[in-house]
Image (tube, rainbow, N blue to C red; front, side, top):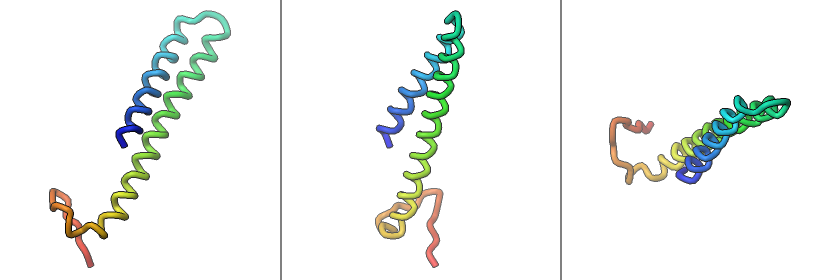
Length: 80
């Protein structure tokens, strides 16, 4: 998960830099830079959201197998 956070942080920073530079570009290239910057921002957010959901699904499916090793915190797992 740490690698995904780093990759999406880099993508967000790159997208924000391209997005902000589109306001200082002149001519037709400003529209292209605006679109590319917003595209990189949205793609980074979608990547982070999808990887977060996949990571949560993996943790939930593995938790019944490791139930005896889990420490009970604020969330208690109830078995039937």
